[in-house]
Image 1: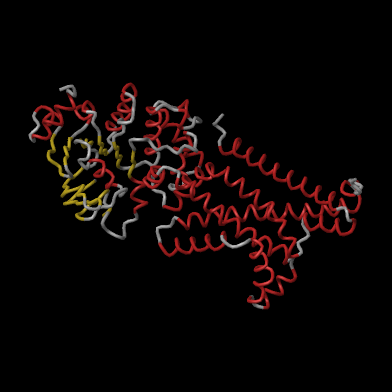
Image 2 (image 1 turned 45 degrees about the vertical axis):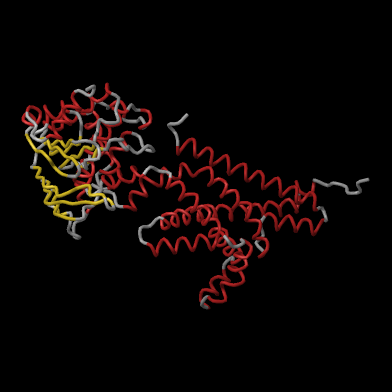
Length: 234
Length: 244
């Protein structure tokens, strides 16, 4: 016989509900910062990876292989527990005056995800016919301007489906930030569980919220793809 | 305007341009023809350095292509290039295809660039398609937009690399008539084409190439009536009566 008595009210109202809401806010902030920064950084790494200058290509490749082949949790620990030991005191003081947990988690998530995004964008770039680059160059655009105005806008369109995956991964991976004390959704769900022993309700609530977050990201990207990127397609 | 002097180019071991000497004067319309693999496309692509050359001299609009000091992007802005496969930017509407380079490179205002683009679209007969996307156009329409796009930079030279070879027969005429119109406006043009009607009626000179060498260079009347070289005779015979 099941002895556990469910009490869903703790996660739908009152103090614990507020904890979860504040956790969701942090998760949203972390995901938003991570998605924007990882996308920009990923774009840059992808372009550097295709540079005609070999050392640049090597550095970009090393970056990519290094960060996508080490665990995200280790990277989070590195930025949080390791990085400040080698930074000058001035920087440390400044970091301590800010929300360093959040910053370390955001940096780790951004860098980790940017490596995957860079590979997705690179395969998008490679799928654009080389004649597009020729057309752009023969109009008088430099290599970088051709990338900016002609190649990347097309590559990003093709890259939208894999990008959605990376964005979803980033949003879900943000839960690892609890390990360094970022008070995001999973952290708060754990807190609720510790205070109430209502683990089933707390983590069910967290699960539902993550799911909703993923659905919203997917829907937004879908909308963006349809309305902004491909308005002329049915 | 364009001066080739002893130009050589190799693709790995393949000798694609073998000592080219050619001089195109301002306002001249030159048609380059020859069998496939003769190097004619490579020749035209060296003029805006889509293909670099390895030996010889090449001067285009006063700029020395062998000099490291030459700003290649500046040269390309002065030379319009029309491709066999059109190569419009598929993510941009017709008007944006045409205005992109004038706005970003010539620093024209958007309004100014759009007014000029509309004039060009009128000229190629596609003003109604200003907001269409390339995929919504026929091949002939795409090529006319591509010509308008190249003209929007107010180039001093126009290069055409088999502009009608990818088109259905009924669309060739509309593109050729735009080119003819352009030729009569005094544009310096180099066209790689198999359209012998165009060569005969519009061009000032026909250049016949094979195996990376210019075998014959003549006035169109002369070239068609009395080709000197055996390979040119054979080429013309095949082109004019492909059933034999």
